[in-house]
Every structure is written in structure tokens, then in C-alpha cells.
Length: 369
Ligand SMILES: [Zn+2]
Image (tube, rainbow, N blue to C red):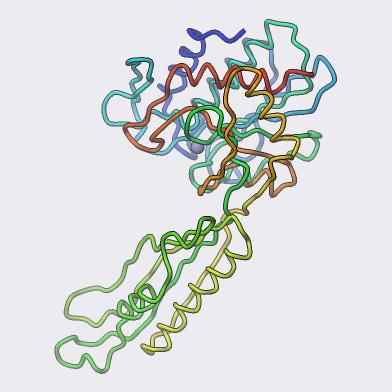
């Protein structure tokens, strides 16, 4: 069964491997050789070349030993920076990183639990349906690995993504749709002291648009943000160009469309008011999803958690993950918390007890009734 010492060693080994997005070769090789040592066949897909990275998604199929749903577990193997030379230590039951890096428990906690599951299943006879493990690449740079996954022939009933922060027990049943905007205002350059009236200031146009815009938290399901603004050349030149990067998110597609329309109207109105022209590129990096509590995938998570003493909490997230992509592909998926806190920060930490619980949860999720 799940072994705390082994789980900790698996995590420490993973954490010490540098694995930024598009450069997951070393960690993928480590995972592949770990699984080969357990006599599992792994398969790496062609995603690496499709996304101009050096690694594809890693797939493993563990055949079922009994009737039961076909379940996929997924975790991503890339991390954000700074992540070079992560040194792990354990203090008061918390796994942390020394020095100036993230810990990388996002999402190596999920990867660890999947490797521990494979370890336990290789050593025991345990009644379960077919299990697929997928280790995705380039999640942190736009869910790219998941987008290139081919899951059509797998006959999946459900997918549990192990990539939400917080104590084990959170079941994220909803996540937002997102629209992104790359907007450029083009005005007319002029000498700021001699002939400002002949110019059209693109920065002024952009600021007018932003000042008209509803931003921040719009309602409980909807948010909007202007993330960067850049433009102009010098203090004595009326700025000819200004670029704005913005986004809107909502769990409700209608509310998303409404907020996105509003933002486009503000960009256009400001251009018209100032005489600048505006070029708006709007795209959807990922779709949202929204499941109800009585979906079988949620009911299974709730009963698995209760069976091992974890209190389930149904919740939703404001972030996108591979879960969004699975649902968009027609594979019903929820995002489960994997135990880490302060992810993407240097103060990221992971309680050892949560890592053990997560591993136990995977076993409980596949256990045939
Ligand atoms: Zn993550």
C-alpha cells in the first residue's frame, strides 16, 4: 500500500529535476525509466515537435483487473520559473525549497501520486478497472500538451486532473472560459512641444479605453484584467503606438461574451473619441467547463474521499488547467487539489501528509465497488 517514505523519495527526485515548459526531456526520461522498472510500457506522443518543445506527453495504460470504469489521471510535468537547482527539505512535516526557487509541487505532487499508484498496483492484486496515466507537457504556457492529446481510442469514462492547489479534498467542478485581447492603438506622431495638435496620442487613446472599462472582479463568476501596456518612444514625441494586453474570464459563457463585448466597445469608443485607429485581436485560449454535483465523476470522488476519511469540498477555480481541455474534448474531467500551497511562488510548500493522502485517494478512486 501507499508508503510515506517512498512517496517522499519519489517527490524529492522529481523536484530536483529542472523541467521548465518546452524542456521536459529529463523529467520525462526519469518517469519513463521509473515506470519501466515496474514493467509498465510507456508511450510518448508527437506533441513535442508540434509545440516546438523537446518532449511529448507520456502515456501509460494499466489494464483493469476487474470490471470498473476506465479512469484517467493527469498531471503536468513542466513548471514555472525560477526552478533551476531546486533543493528540497522537510521542516515540521512540510516539504519546501531552499534558496531562490519554486518547489514545483505544481504539479510534481500530482506526478508523485501517479507514480506511487503505479508502484502499488505493480506489487498488489487489487480489483480495479483500466487506468490511464497521462503526464502532460507545456501546461504552464497555455495547456499546450493537453491540447495535442489524442484520447479518442481510450474509451475513458472519467478524467481526474491532479492540479489544483490546496488541501486534498477539493473537487473543482467549474472553471472559467477565457478570452484574451491583444490590442494596438495607432495614432500619429508629432513634436510634443512644437506641434502637439497635429498628433494623435495612442497612449491617451489606450488610457481612455481602460478608464471606461469594468475590470477586476465583475461578479462571482466573472473577472477581467488589463495585464500590460506598452507604447511611445520618448517624452517629447506624441506617442504613435500603444499596445494593451487584456483578458476576461467567466464560468458562464454568456457573461464572458457580455464582458468581452464591453471591452471591445471601450477600445473602439476610445479610438473614435481620439481619432486613433485600433487593431483588436481577440482569441479564446481555452474553453470553460461546469459540472453539477450529481455527475457520476463527482459522486465517485466524494465517496472515494469519504472512504479514506477526507472531507470532500465541491468548489470552483478561477484558473484554467488541463481539465478545461479534457472537457472541451468530450472527456468528463474535474480538477482535484493536490495538497500544495502558494504555488508559483518561492514560498510554495507541500505537507508530506497531503502527498500521502493524495496517493491514497488515487487508489480509492480506482477501487472497484
Ligand atoms: Zn499546475
